[in-house]
Figure 1: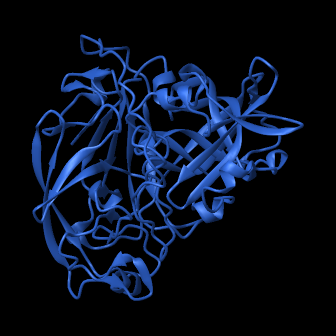
Figure 2: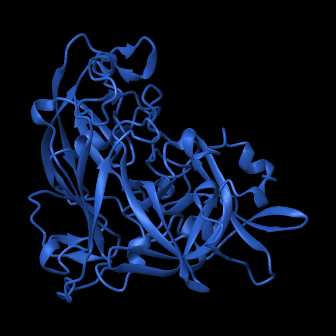
Figure 3: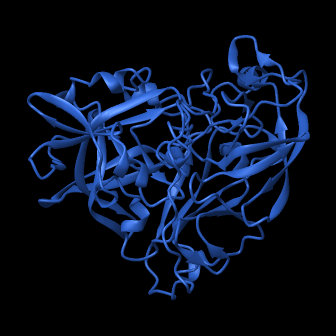
Length: 418
């Protein structure tokens, strides 16, 4: 996902990119960043091996419903907390390593599955204005039981987006851009944010109003909200395999687009036999904003991140040699596919060189019409400091995301590994 109004809030929606075929979004902040929040105290020892459970779910990159490209989807199961037998499976949920929290469009919810309202001490219902580079999501906080394979997050706070009972949107929220009001405009039924942080806002929202709201019959008012009441990273709420995730996507042969792609999402890192760390590269991210550094063509991009929720590798080359597409300005359209390289560096001073391609996006779309997986898509970021390593970076790799304050055999989160 793209960045939200903060460097610390880069976890919120930090990197979510809309994925319509000819309407890619560039990375970049919406407004000035708030103060960074310190990471949680690290665990001193790697997690002890646990009893093996089914901790994997399939990933599919497909355009079958929303026409999106390079968009990884999973299916989730939710149940009413007060009626455990009242459950629903929802497909086409965007899998996003660049944000935190579960958000589902109201239109995707079965009326028989009733999420529980979340209220404050005065009986006001809580809501959230989630800001993205291309607009905002508005809706109430609700509590549900989330099931993914044999993992469960009980009484998990989530956001219901475009709830018709919350059609009156406060002015401070509407002033942040266009509302991402439908699943079709968002290219997903919702988003599962499994990024680097424990909460979607953290210390910033505990001190500053404007993201969370308290609502009653008189309207909605921006409030501060303590960390434990905010939307949590669903993975941290599991009883096992709760320190991070692993995304493994199949590669695309010779960088040729594919009709679809598939892979596996695995929960936990070094917690049971099937999630042992095998990554050669471990790049620790900044504990306040989740960024690493990319060096490309002699320029350092300080706001860099690995983001499964972005369908393109977003950056602005220092020499501006990559031309934008005539009819899709968010994409690059060089005359021929370029073989490029960059160096990624973490706060632990570990560096790794990576190769990537930049193809002519319009040619790809014309020659591979109806395909879903494109390995060499690049586009322009809205900030010159941003290098958003979107889904093309993930093909053919196994990507580890370890959450802040958690530890694996490779180190303490927040970190990315592959």
